[in-house]
Image (cartoon, rainbow, N blue to C red):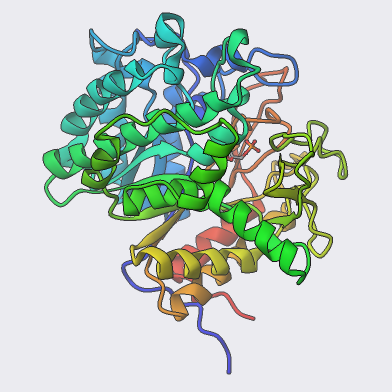
Length: 477
Ligand code: BG6
């Protein structure tokens, strides 16, 4: 029988970005620097001062979203644009920017879906007390979140709290500016995550308190982890990896406590966060309404001997296949490795559409809460042709297979609310600058040359437009 790819009528179709990756205007109209404005100055990265110039061109960009047929847009709010020093005096021009953006989206029939935090801690708080490392960050985040949620609450139904706590733990020095004296202390990353869990729970409570009918959840970077073989030892390693890399985060959001096996492993290895009395009560009070997933690829686990060297995931800095710097190893628990059965993109990220069906089913069975996709896409080298076209069949292929994978999950009874591919337009990749592109809309600049920042529609733009216009029905096997 032919599969029907028509999605439910209420399904929201969109795309995603984040503030520092697209906005630019890093120190304009009262905004002060965030840690990403400092981190991205490093060699090999792209400084965020201009990015895709969305701050100045957002009306043109929203017009393109409308033309694409989007009914939702996931973006993030830059904390340092609202409160340049993290707390204290509010920046009226920053507040106005997001009012203008949200109003423009609404006027074009697009549901605004803001994320409160996407890696960009205000630098003032990093200088004051080392940012998320210090528990004072939780109170300052509450101050910021309370303001933002009250201010935009009447116009925003869906709220995303913190982007990718799991990835922040994996790549803590890339996602946070960590002073040197902490670099030899691997416990710190779990402490940062604990503070973020508190901030997440507080945000959920605030949405429930301040936004009638508002719904809230975290956006988590999530990859299923398969065993390297059917040997029981590999299956156990995969379970260990799923507990520490995945459920360690999501169990807090829905059960209000840390995954037991993962926390026990961290405790035995001196890595567990310091948890104060009442913290888990707060987790329970700040339960999520849904879970948002950033899904790109899957992982594979095998056994790690007790004496193995501990390390976190590496990444491929070159964009030449086979140059992944290394895989996470947790001695005596698991070690990740490249899955030989899957193809990858040029940065060695596996391509695994069925993995998306797999996690949607698994998470829905585990928590029984609606799910949405807040990121999914393929980073690739794109070429702007002399006639202004960009031919990106690899992106169309990747997205088509993942959209079908979502529909397969829906057909199994999973409640999926929305799909936001990454990304609406080209932006600064967190690990590979402007070389690695994700957008439906090409932005004419490179890492070193700002050119004219003009927008061009890629082939994938026209393809996605048809998918949205037909609510998925144009897709066939
Ligand atoms: C997610 C992030 O981890 O992956 C995005 O939320 C990021 O900010 C995306 O851009 C793709 O990763 P990268 O490193 O290619 O930019």
